[in-house]
Image (cartoon, rainbow, N blue to C red; front, side, top):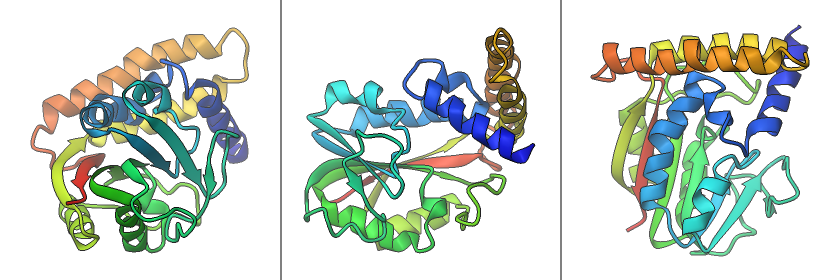
Length: 237
């Protein structure tokens, strides 16, 4: 059953990553769109590289304001990915090659995240922007390559040690979004290969779980004591 759910979850991302529906899959994804994407639209510019890009779900939303959008992943899922590389050693990319970088829910999967941030700083031009998203609470996933969870203070220290200036640091979601993500992942994944049922389940989930959990977190954890995670905007001086 676990293997079945994992395969379906991967298929859902593949089917929906480049559509407007993807943001409603779960409260955790919805938080990314409501918190991370507006910040990315405000700050990214020029030539951008998506580090650990996966299906590149934010490409279509950001590309209109960019000169170019390149992807990098250790195990590329798309022919559009330009680089196949380890984030901790991006020797194939020259110094100061990009104006902006995304690193969305990737840092927890790297055994030496400080190396990846130093490499990201190296490939960004002066004045370059890194948009970074990390979890604070999360179930184990993509094992065994699941190493870290981050507080706002630990994330700030890592970025500063890598030579970045933290411009913005926003919390995203909370306990309700964490719990709701588990519910969404289970029920939407179970129904995804059943014609005629998957969109009914998806629609019900999008209202009863995805949006509801987002609102509950906003109401009951305004101070961000137990955030789902953080989004940072970091500047290379």
